[in-house]
Image (cartoon, rainbow, N blue to C red; front, top):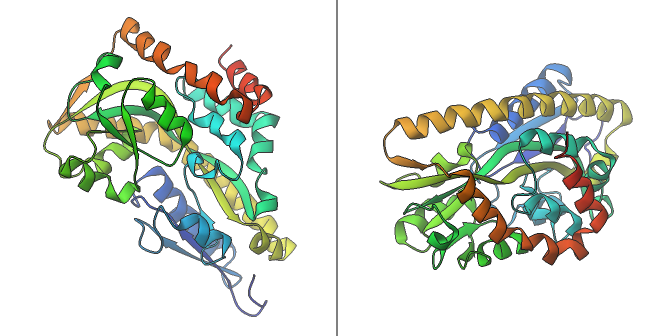
Length: 312
């Protein structure tokens, strides 16, 4: 619940990645703007790199109001709203522009609010770019993934995605990925360029196949009861700040991923695997049947709305 008017309302914003990622920068910008515009009324504390709560526990912490803001990947919300699994479907969106168009559709706005009755209030979508495949060996054809174990976020869709290429999916917190790669527990991962450096830290040699096969988006969320308890005038200003921060985060995410791509390849420890159009289509053909497997729980209307944004 919100504090008394004489005391600042405390917002603990926790996340699991570094300050220099799109999510990390967004959290710090939110903190900065709140300090400038709502000084004395609201105080924001930012906890990066799982320093307050980790991947596995952050949703429960939000529901218990131990933290007031998170920005988990959309995969984290499927048990609360299965329709959000649409964002995990492989090769659904042609590019990042298509993702942005979908997020502006009414269907997508409804998904943002779909968990409010369960204690999770969606504030905005944050984009973090298209996902690539990273592994300890080159992946050119779907058969190259057979028998390998890939780290995933908790998602039945992502499990099915890797099963489609005869690979194993291992659910692991982001903070444990580097250790698991070094130990050989997993041999590959998926993620945008801005996350690849962190999750491959300490690994001498890795290959990144530029598949652009999926999207890693976050939903900026707060505790529903906490949010509605904030006085209307203060909440209105927070809404304005949320909109401004989201525009900045999404505008910078694409350029940051491009910079990270260039830096990762420049350091010489990562080898880029570029797919031919025929090779990429082979991956898409193997993974696309996952759409049909999840259409019933996602909803054919949601799936159609997502597919439509690919058409100019």
